[in-house]
Image (cartoon, rainbow, N blue to C red):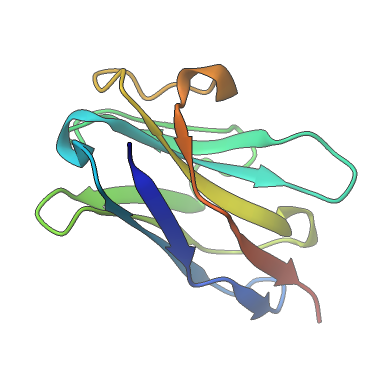
Amino acid sequence: QVQLVESGGGLVQPGGSLRLSCAASGGAFSTHAMGWFRQAPGKQREFVAAISWRGGSTDYADSVNGRFTISRDNAKTTVSLQKNSLKAENKGVYSCASSPLGHTPSQRVAAYAFWGQGTQVTVSS
């Protein structure tokens, strides 16, 4: 069992930056792939970014590629999402997730076994 707790959400102006963090405990974090997903009100959860167990492979949604960067620190059991040039459509609840399929930074929700509660991001002027 892996417990995940996100932090770093808040209100930011369009064009601004925000860094989300996810702290993991209780499991084999270093062998799991990690992902970030976003859920907007009334919509399904969607993939944002993912990273393999050692950080050697990453994957991004087309809409955030070049603006967002996912990273991890296995010694600290944390995964982060640096978000730059934020747009209004990037708002929503961001959740981190853990997948036992450590080699593959998957875009599929079903690949992830453990989820955090999420942190709210609002992009507005």
